[in-house]
Length: 115
Image (cartoon, rainbow, N blue to C red; front, side, top):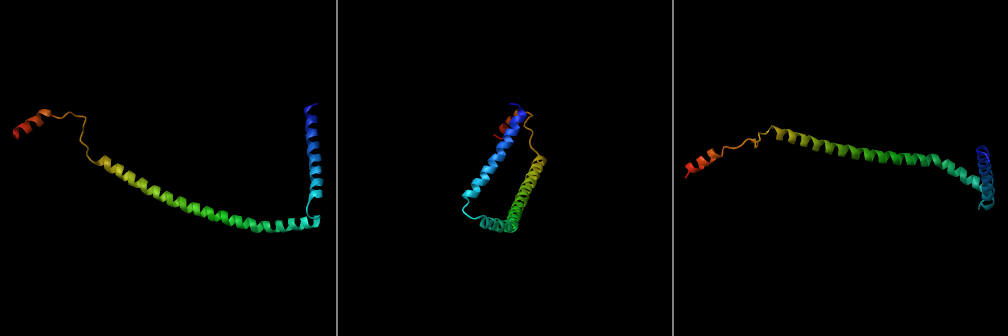
């Protein structure tokens, strides 16, 4: 069999499967067609209201998340400013240079003179 024939068989299988499913559904349905159409119509009429409720809920959640993000950003920004200020202050204070050797003889002489 060629590849084109396999595609045709697949489509034929989908069509036959759909038809079998439709007939089975009609035979097994617990309600008459009129009742089923009435229920479907009521459900379709309720969809806009449900969509509006969902939209409102999503908007409220988005607003809450936005406020939370703003607060967290404000707290983070404050801590960052404090850290930068502390860093600047730390760099401006004089730190003794520990890399140069101390004059040990001067320290020894001054301590001997005190005796």
